[in-house]
Image 1 (cartoon, rainbow, N blue to C red):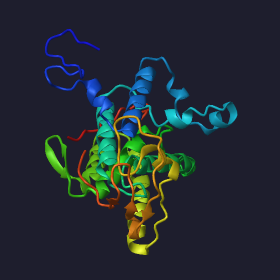
Image 2 (cartoon, rainbow, N blue to C red):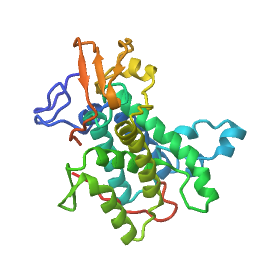
Image 3 (cartoon, rainbow, N blue to C red):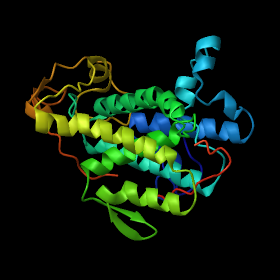
Image 4 (cartoon, rainbow, N blue to C red):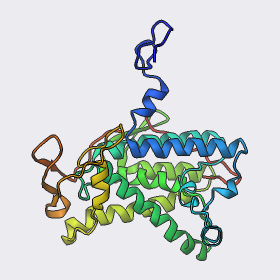
Length: 293
């Protein structure tokens, strides 16, 4: 494609700066698809193309009417337009990208996209399993899991990056305290905090299983499925479409470390469990969620 305007290059950049489309396509694949689906579905509901009741989680609708699309839509609708929704989507994109690129946990795929996909799937299953239990306990939780999953990812990132600084209203906050600062702001502002607690609880369960249990008890039972490693590759996140070429098996080292794993470009790959820095439907009361830098 040739651009006629001056200052616009053939990479779709204007004045040497990347366009929003460029930045979107440079996101790692899980983050890109989740954010893209969330934007499309949230816009569709807010412009009344789709009813919010048709995207919310409903096991009765899945069982009786085979509306299996709810397994996806309930994780992608952010809620009505509000400043809180904007910040929530910013948090989703930011911390999902940091997790996917930052190698926070290695459950057998070197800490790249395959491990993040496994983590995301476990969180989604946790939302679906715990939702009826919370309802039975008379704990109000919205049947839309987009904010829950966002806080799930945020909490896990914070546990693996406790000393990394984030920014709230210009004030630096260490990663370890970031979820609790958001929780305090939400409670003080009178906005629903149940999705936060739900996501943080699920995130802590994942952190305990992926990091604490191997170190303390010497049992490493979380293993990224082989099909995810074959699809996404080992120890990489790939902004572009991943290869389907199978990878050589990885041998898990002590306490979840990966040892002697081969990649397409190197003979061996050493992956540790050390993280690195990177970076809802609101049923009537849109909560303001504050973004991070």
